[in-house]
Image (tube, rainbow, N blue to C red; front, side, top):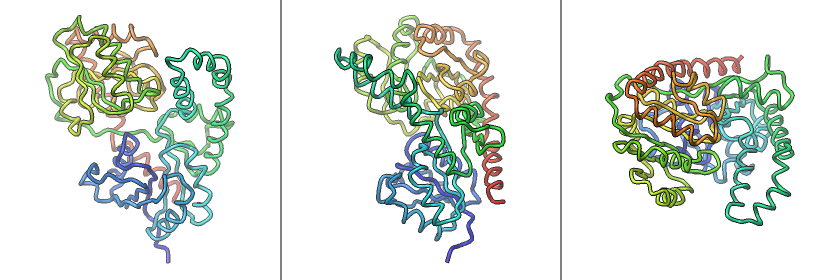
Length: 393
């Protein structure tokens, strides 16, 4: 017999993992009155915060979007009293699994996009373009025969169809900011007003005990992946400022496929004060010391690291690569620093300006601490409670 439903579930591949999984843990903490079930094939309990006692793992036997997981998912929805099922990955995951969940249960389905619209199309393009690097023939083939599928939107049309299918199958389509919702609505032919789109901002815990004064340290914190994070950009920027500021250092926190390439690039650029720290469990200690936190992504849905930098009294700077990044750092030079995309020299000039001016750094850092409060856990909780109440009617 099914229990009276009052709980919520999230679907992941690895838990905890990266930023998306961190957001799920934050939501679990906010929704402390609900039992939170996490469906995933891979769990890393050593990384799960001990205070999150309301999270219960549900082991899947196959990759998270595999339809062979459906019996396990449906069985647990019924037995564990799950009223809300959240897909925090890609739209295609919803397309693969949502119909079966709807047919077997009356569970409400929420899709929560943690990315900028059509990130799948962008990833597909950038990965395929990267494969041509260093090969004249592959580059020629890309330019003559393959790139036009992206230039003229042929490939994007495929993803528009998937987004529309996802939209039709869910009860709520969550987006990180209103501009994202409007962009998707326009692309799939939906009127935004009165639609299923709801804004669900990511939140950050305030740090009223942030450390000052800061040290002369710049940090890059994130996954070392090429197509989106573009960590090689911070090394190119640093190569233009390092000699001008001999008492500053650059710390790179994170791991990923590009790690060895980055170390080789640092060596070829003859960089002297760059420290590759790999995975760091105590990131807080670096926020405590860093004066500036740099993001050099080409594509970024939101940028949790920017909010974390702000709440810890660091100046956050990034390329103006998305509406989510703009919402966090705008206005530029007030709450943070925004640089036109792909402008390495402009970024370096802005970074050098910050490094040279203590008063400017302190002012932007303090403004950022005040501005980030609008993304407080309390506001996020209000948004989530609002949609859960809406779906419970």
